[in-house]
Image (cartoon, rainbow, N blue to C red; front, side, top):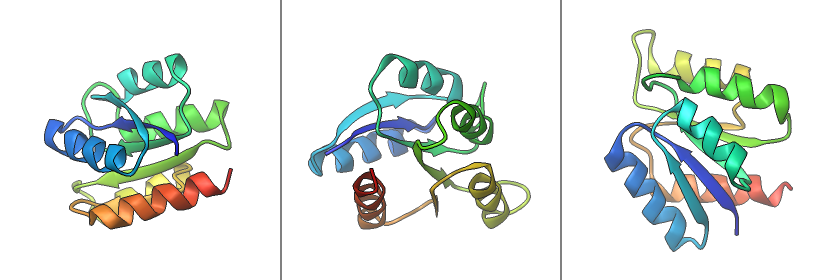
Length: 123
């Protein structure tokens, strides 16, 4: 099982992800935005990150780029509920910035669990 960092400003989504990942046997660390997420990543041993894209203080794209520069092999899943340019365009930008996988909210719990298992198995 892995150590997973969830970076998500929506408390309900963050709590749901925490519950489903803990039930799957993972250890979970939480952060409410990209700045707190970067700090949490640097102070914990993290195997995989799940990050929202639209957040206050520091958005997901900036967070992905920053982490990818230092840790090119880090596994990152980007999630988004939407944006003015359309969900798919924002998620496509996340893939171009280095996200390993992307999901539109709402997503199926089983999809996230399967993606996490797949990415952690690549290590």
